[in-house]
Amino acid sequence: MDNQQRYKIEEIIWHELRTIVLLIVIMCIQKIFLANIFGVSLNLLLLLVVLRTLIEPIAKIGRWALYGGLIFDSVSGAWLGMHSIGLILAAVTVFLLLSRITSENWILPIVAVIIGSLVYYFCNGVLLYVLVRSFDVVSYITTAVIPDILIILVPALPMFLLLRWLRSMQRGELPLDVY
Amino acid sequence: MRDRSSFLGRAGYRRNALIVAALLFVALVTFLLDTQGVLSPVRAYLTNKLTPLVSAVNGVNGQVADFFAGSHDLQRVTKERDMLRKENSDLKAQILRIPQYEIENIRFREQLRIEKTNPWQLIGADVSVKTLADGRRIALIGVGSNNGIKIGMAVIARYQSSPPSLIGVVSVVNSDSANVTLIDDYSSAISVQAYHGTELVRGILHGNILANGVLQMSEIEREAEIATGDNVVTAGLTRLYGPSLPNAAIPSGIPVGIVKTAYIDGRSKAVDVQPYINPELVNYVWIINNDTK
Image (tube, rainbow over all chains, first blue to last red; front, side):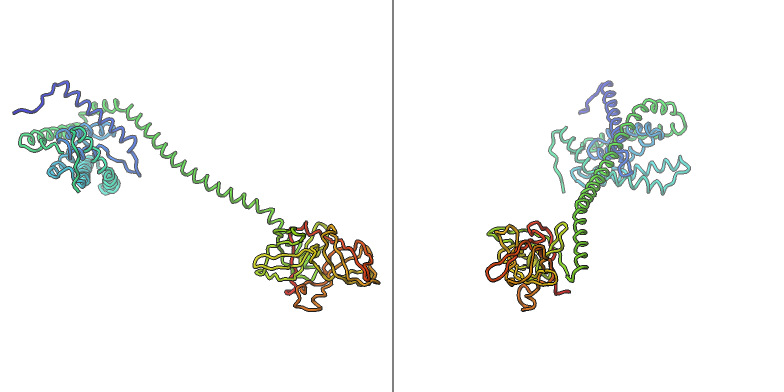
């Protein structure tokens, strides 16, 4: 029984290009509107990757993480692939730890964002520690990790509900919440 | 709601794991190659292609930041405007009070001058209402028993170049107001005296509504020497006859007016007195509080 739909090569390319364009738009939105909130930037890409991991296939989110990370690296001057590694590992960790919990639970996105953010910033910190001699771990934690995690928690639940609602609309499902 | 086919089932799980592993591998290889400088041209190419977009985005970002900063400035300017409006309002109120302060200053200086030249302790009061109905001449003043006002106290005033002159007597006292029966009221009867050279002529001063502001001094001895132009002042006789009488608080020597005409009225003499002040023209008065002097 082979239910897998076969796509033509041009359809696959078109789909991937569409994803890349969408990620560029997301990056622009992040750069324009979310660059500086109370002195902290909101990492919209990380938020979307982690939250979509809860409701989308991991393979699809893996591609998002790879493309998004590369785009982020290109516009931020970082080494290519650096943020992709962090995003993919964050998505994988969230997937492995929380995949068996129902996505109707409202606490799930909070926990997922905390875990995903910790993994993401841990990976980035390790890579920076290895490659940058003057990297200060304490400054990184106090000025980047903690503020960024706190600010990304704010829109976590609304964004998750929005994504879940969009997903339900696509599938014609009725969202059911568990309190 | 989760797409469970993506991770449930051994085949799907393995396939997804392989895809993710491949993606991670690609990312790691890309990262390692870039750190070794192999992908520098690729990075330069991507950066060059994305630079215009990044610049445009940064421009919009600056505009957005300026918008929010402008919004913040607008809030600050609005706050400052409100403060300035309030300050302006306060200053206007102060400016409006300046003439009032000047008038009060003039009145206090006037009161001080009167008190210096006369043995009187004065209490200033605004004239609120003048009742002219039923032929009465009553004025309502803005002080009462709370200010030490009592019935029978003399009320004086000044108008232009006139001396401080009697205009009436307190007849009714309320807590914060009092009625003054003016000297031209028909019920007014005040003991007065006129100086004719070295002679002193006493009589009773009455108001007369028909006399067009001219008062009538009666009960004068037929042989008394009195002529036009003689000064008429209060005699303070009530105090002599009985300190508890209503008009006992009127001291002697308060200017009232000058003799206009003198004539014989039966067995006595009568005099028309032109008061120094028309009480109808007065807006501010002083009450003589003789008890404190």
